[in-house]
Length: 129
Image 1 (cartoon, rainbow, N blue to C red):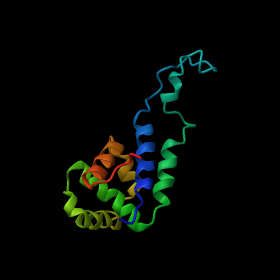
Image 2: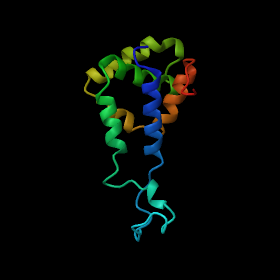
Image 3: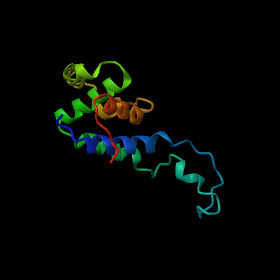
Image 4: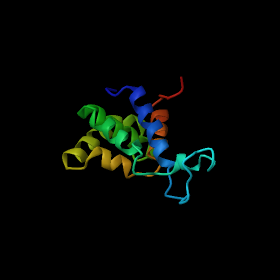
């Protein structure tokens, strides 16, 4: 693979951080996190850069890395088997060539981090140190 496992793992970590975000649940939030039990940590706010960081991360990948990231997702989601990885990469390239922006596609999938992790595992790779 052209994409480093570490890059996939970083994406997984950030995607999972984004997945746990929720809407405003503490409208009377205090200015001190201790006062409100640090509940605002999991609130998706306008000053939260998590999604933007993921988009920048995808934008920083080259064409082959983006295609392989999506191919790992295809394997993790069960759309393709690990031995079909080259076909999954080709399909991912075709999807992007057809105008599908990779960041939009990935961020539109619930639990994308978990699916990528499962894809890595199916390919015999892991984020474990």
